[in-house]
Image (cartoon, rainbow, N blue to C red; front, top):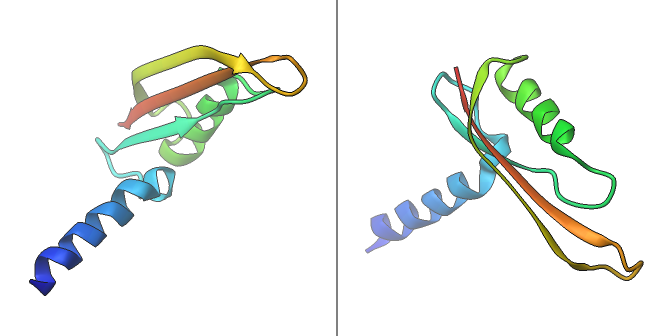
Length: 85
């Protein structure tokens, strides 16, 4: 019973690490660049830092406007998923 518990906990840690994982070829990474004053450039900078400059393929790019914040500005939710080459 102890082994399955350790496997589940290990899976959760690996899944939560996201950007913290290594950048071996074919590794898929997810970057969040949501919020005021941020844009797609913030995500691509993170991808460049993890995979190497332009050494990745974009798997998906999702962005959507969400509700307004306290300043009455619309919040943008942006997520970039890449696969390192």
